[in-house]
Image 1 (cartoon, rainbow, N blue to C red):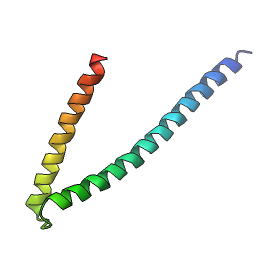
Image 2 (image 1 turned 30 degrees about the vertical axis):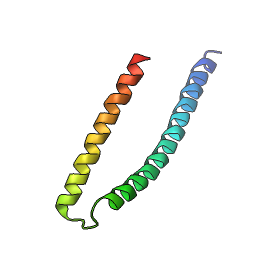
Image 3 (image 1 turned 90 degrees about the vertical axis):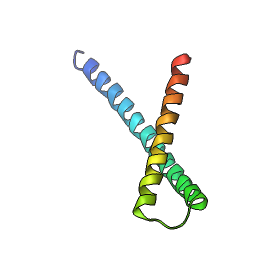
Length: 80
C-alpha cells in the first residue's frame, strides 16, 4: 500500500506537466501566427527598404509595444 501513494502523486505531476506542455505548444503556435500577422502589417505600413537601421527601429518599437502591453495586462489582472 505504501508504494501506491507515491505512484499516484507521480502520475498526477506527470499529467499536470503534460497538460502544461500541450498548452505551451498551443501558445507557441498562436505566437507564431501573430508574429506573421504583425510582420505583414509592419511591412505594409512602413517602407519596403529593409536596412539595418529599419530592422533596429522596428524591433525597438515592437519591444516597447510589448512592454507596455505586458504592463497593462499585469495591472488589469492585479485589479481583479
